Image 1: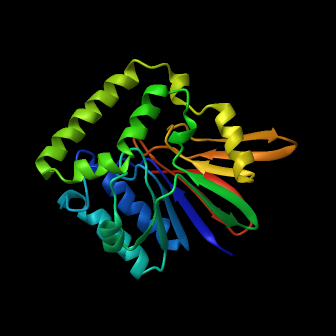
Image 2 (image 1 turned 120 degrees about the vertical axis):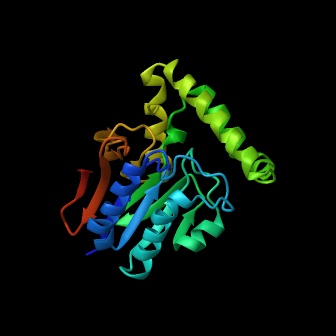
Length: 243
């Protein structure tokens, strides 16, 4: 049977070496045993383009290569709101398949499952959705990548500072998913299971929609401990922590 692992919101960065170490350990202990590893966004705290040497992250990238080459783990990488500038060059270097769509449907144990980063479900956060539309446009990305690495570093710093300030001023509920939008995602994509991250609120939500039982699994962040979902054999969907 297929052994599949899902992670999201690691926010790996040079400023958090202990989390880099935790991921490397997780890769050896858990991901190396899996047939497939799905990274559902915000794997990196920020990414400024595939020309960024980012030496502090080299062990992470080398570990992804090792998972693919040595253990045969198939790796899929979905963009988040922090690492949406990850491109084909890094994908080729690290041996992962890049998912460029906001939603991605797979089949697990005969069930259709929808994968998302999760930020598109947070429609009550109007300010963020406007920002997302701007930075995800091809024009904005091309403009950023045409600048020097030093300029991009400063722009990323400014955006992160603004984001932190904005989050302290918003109500918690605004930054969670909108229930109507979530129901719509189940209906429009004809699935009974959705897996996503982004909100940093790990949980398994059960709800009946149009007479159908649905399950929404929210992956946790990696600020204090690791968080992952494992689907193995007939054991079902197991949301777990990793320390």
